[in-house]
Image 1: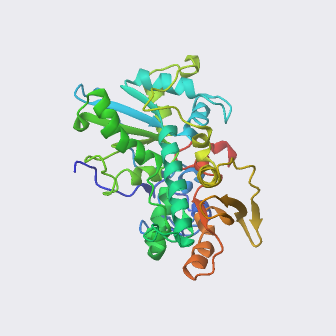
Image 2: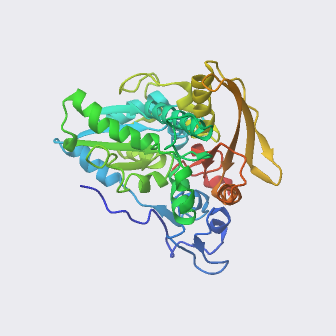
Image 3: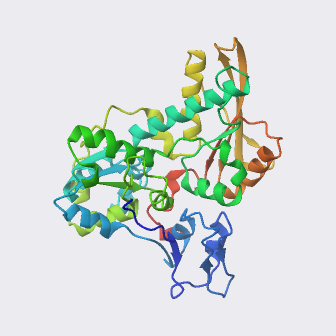
Length: 389
C-alpha cells in the first residue's frame, strides 16, 4: 500500500512554550505532561490527536503536522486527478479567516475557491454522512433484533451500540478500553466512506485509474489526519484518503494563491458524487447530530413513522452526559420497545459511561461520543481566536 507513515499529529514547540499550563486544562486524556514553570510535552501514547490544546494555546506553541505540501504537489502533477471533500463544519468557520462573522455560511465561496486552487472535482462530505447514518441506523436495528432474540440476527454485535465517527474517541477506546470495541458501530466515518466511494464508484464513472486519483479532505478536525493514515483504511485497494487539511490550512492556501475570497460568488455548488444529501447529514458536526440522524433512521424503518422531537436531559452528576428514552413501535416484534439513548460530550466524561457498560449495569442501547465541545464545529482544525484569551 502506498501510504504515509503515521506520525505524531500534535506537537509542542518547547522554544515557544511559556509553561502556563493552559493546555493541560483542556486535554481530555491527560496526555500533556508538565506544570506551571516547567516546559510541557505530549505523551503520544495517551494523545488522541484532537487538537484542543492547539486551539487553546495562547502563545501558538502547539502545532499539528501539515499535509499541505503533499496536496500542492498533487495539484501540480498533471498525472493526478485531485478530488476534494469538505465537511459541513468547515463552511460555517472558514469565513472567520477572511474577516467575516463567526458562523457565516460561505459554502459557495468555499467551493469556488477550491476550484480556483485547481481541484478537478469538488464534493461535499454530506452524501457519505448520509451513508454513515444509514449504516449506523441499520446496524442498531439489527442489534435490537439480536437483543430481542429474533432469529437470523444471532451474530450481530452487542448493545449498547456506540457511534464510531469521531477518530479521537476511537483511538481512546482502543488504547484504554479494548473490551468495549465490539460495542462500537462497524460503520466508517463519512471521511473514510467518501475516500472508498471516490476511488471505486466515482473513479469508474469518471474513467479514472484509482491509482491516479488523489483524495483530499478539508476537515475541522486534526484527528482526521491520524484516521486517514490508519492501515485499515484501504477499502479501495489504495489509501482511501490521501491527505487531510484543516479549515485553517485551506484558508492559508487560498490566501497564498492570491484569491479574493470575499468577492467570490456564494452560489457555487459542489459536484454531485451520486445523489443529493439530507439535512440529517448537515447536523453531523454538532453534538447529538449523529445520534439524532441515526435514531430517526432506525425509528422510521422500525415503525414506518417519523420521529418527533427528542428531549435530552442532563444526567445528574454528569452534566456533559445527556440521555433520553424513545419509545419505538416495532412492527416486526408487535410491541413498543423503549430505547434508551445517551450523548457524551468530551472524552474526559466518557469513562463512567464505558465502565457501566463493561460492568453490565448500563441502561443504554445507543451512545454517541464526541470529543470536542459542541462537536466537530469546535474541532482542533478550526480557526483560532487568540483575542479570546
